[in-house]
Image (cartoon, rainbow, N blue to C red; front, side, top):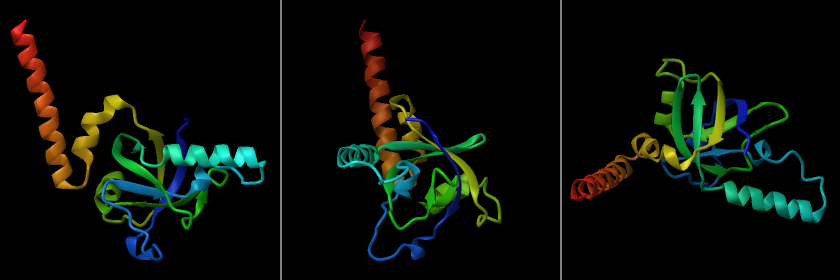
Length: 157
């Protein structure tokens, strides 16, 4: 999948209508960043829906210049934005937005971000960048156990 490039502004949790919950470690964008138009045949609509469903729940690397965070994708139809305009809204947890804005005092300005699907080799970075400390601890212990298992295998040989 090609990266999504755009100018994103942060939407606060209070601006999300209804009971639309986004767990820690996830981010939400409009599906229009992926789909150009629904003005297509029924078969093509089915393919577009499949594409959105396949992307939902995948790890993405969100980066701006040399800073990056890793979050899980979710779509929110009420958020504004599209690939055609190149600008839109995004919901991402506060620690992630602060990291992307380089800890500046003014965090209300839009950021020029690149969103790309993360590969499996980024897994250690998923672990250390998750906003929930329990996930970070569990991931760190998992990585440590893999490292110790590989070390014991190496020493056994």
